[in-house]
Image 1: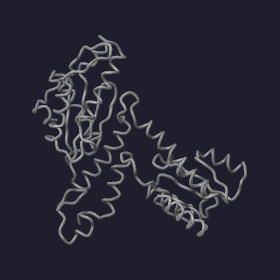
Image 2: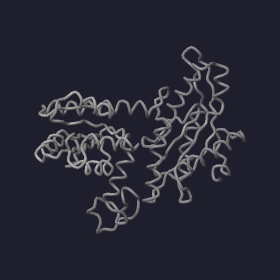
Image 3: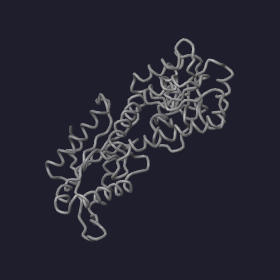
Length: 342
């Protein structure tokens, strides 16, 4: 049988490890695979780091949050809280202000200095209900401030409120308003993780860049409102053409990018052929204009291989092939000499 993560053969003596191969530590597989799907899976358990120097409080919060369905990690001083944050990358931190070694204010200051940790939602806990402390915390961009003693129901409500608010803003920041597809920011985030997976565990994936070649002429002839409608319809075509786990993004303007997991170049071309056929059927311009317009697209595809030094180079290679296709006016065709060069 094969490893569920890296697709390598699993020898019988490792079957008890739930079909994960011996070539890589079991926990590494789990961590990276979780990161790979973070933001895509809807019912993913949120990780919360709780930092408090009172053992009873720490254990109580652990039990409370665990029963509520959260995955809890604990720290008992400020230095440990910083280290655990970078190691675990939690979805939220609940931080006691009066931590030993490094206090809560200083922990948040240090987390704010790094892009990877500055935006993690954080709630301050404190035994002091003083305005200066609250003002100081808000000045550090904390999301909430809870005074001890507190109601457990109130704490859980505040935790869920902060997480829900963060999910809402992340969803907005990762989606294209017009098409509802993921945007370029999301693409860059995900392709880096796919690249890591491919490099570490010998997994395959492909990237496609797609340009709507005749979009400018549609915009010029029918106007921008019709142009927006065409882009929305193209997005629907793309959702119908690709698999559920393929990541479809609007790269910008009339360009789209697609990540195809566990897919080599040949299989990617077959998937894109399905899209090409839908485009050839044409798009009805609007409810009032029943005229149909055929859509022509230029496509560049590349698959992961060891020669690539980073995900940016993969995108650039696919982009270059797409523009070659566009310049030579191959549009919705798949010229083998172009797709397999560069």
